[in-house]
Amino acid sequence: MATPHTAAVGSNLKLARMTFYEKELNRINDIVYSNQEQIQTVFGVRNYINNNYESDLNLDLLSHIRFVSKYHLLRLFKRLYGLTPRQYLIGNRIEKSKEQLKNGLSVTETCFAVEFESLGSLGTLFKVKTGKSPSEFQKEQLSRSTLNLQS
Amino acid sequence: MKVTLISIPVRDQEKALKFYTEKLGFLKKKDKPLDGGNRWLTLVSKEAQDGPEILLEPAPIHFEPSKVYQDALMESGIPYTQFDVDNVDTEYERLIRLGVEFSVKPSTMETTKYAVFNDTCGNNIALVEES
Image 1 (cartoon, rainbow over the protein chains, first blue to last red):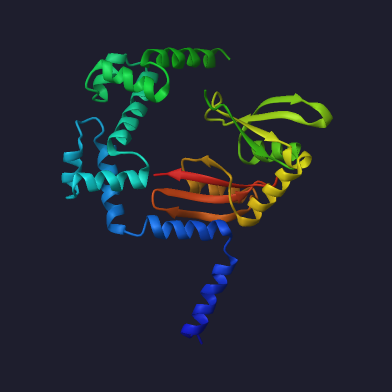
Image 2: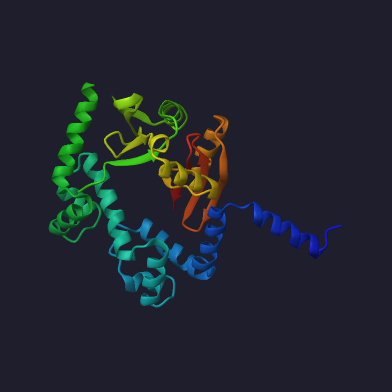
């Protein structure tokens, strides 16, 4: 019969079989991800950014969606993703603009499609994040696809 | 500066080449004979053939501390290297069918899904899916 005592022995055995790696992961998990409510808040905001990256988002709006203070949200988001919501959003837009450029849209069209404030800000951010300007990136992609066709 | 190469220490380069190409699906990029039967052997991911290369290096055979370190990582279950996949579950099923052994089945840690397998060349490797 399973008594509280045998259950405890069972879980100790399970613990003993775990590798150092698994024990450490569990320990870190308990510390970093203990508060489910906070995690759901950050997930909600992250999903909102993923679905609305092409509209004008700011911290005031994002914190309003989940009814938390914006500085609290900023801290929570950074703790789970290692990025601020703004950095995350910019990363998202850059990824999206890469796709648009690969599909042959012009730099100006891409800029409007992903809602960058200006051509200059897309150019600057794109260069910072990818090491290339949008037009350099596009040239490289297009020459690669012709190469693929030839080979 | 940019990152173009990561090293994975292996006990047997030929065996590693087979495992990494036939089971994991990487492509061989460079294979240059070096001194004493060693090779400069690199792989690339099929999805990013101009991306970073993996160097399968025979360090544990020639440099004892490398072997000691590799054994200790294996013993503690620590994956020193991780690969990104679109879907950990699909990849897990595919690799299980190919006879690959997992020490950690697909698990979730909040924003990350992961699993750990044995590359048969001395290493634990993690598969990671970010959501």
